[in-house]
Length: 75
Image (spheres, rainbow, N blue to C red):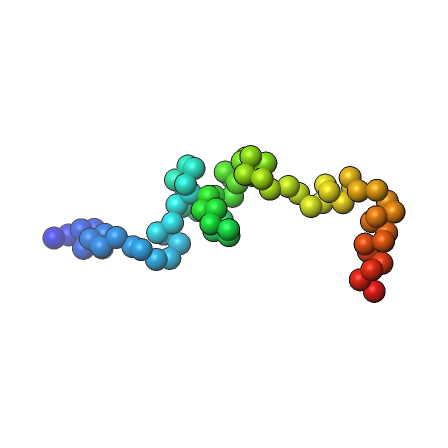
């Protein structure tokens, strides 16, 4: 029984090596928040279809008066 047989004899169920992207299978850069389990590259390409929007763009689509009121209400 060689070293590689002993080393990989038991599958790893914990840690970063046990998780892969559900889209492409990449084990690096996994986003686990909200149960996404996809890599950051796949998330960027599929974010709109999943339902995520950039808050930064929403700020500039709001009327100016609403932005002023919402920023002053925190004082």
